[in-house]
Length: 122
Image (cartoon, rainbow, N blue to C red; front, side, top):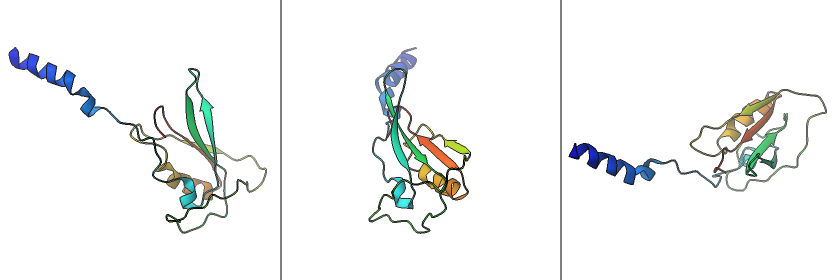
């Protein structure tokens, strides 16, 4: 019984060691991939602002990545046609920066893409 009690006390005291720490800064942004995107905030019912990236379908995406000096491209669309939009949801272990790679592929195939950060991330 004493061992069980000791174990429970230790678990209670060290539970924050195992907690997920949100990654608030982006290691890179979509301009690294040469993507055109619009960044905006979505307000939740409890007044929290979530960060969202919207990528329109693109036909002129550069093949190379520019890690050292990324330049944000002006927001334009291919045309005024309605296109399907894919929502890519991140796992709950990081922010949406890695999803720009998926957006890169989907936008080049003619889809609009939306990504967002969960609460506490980004």
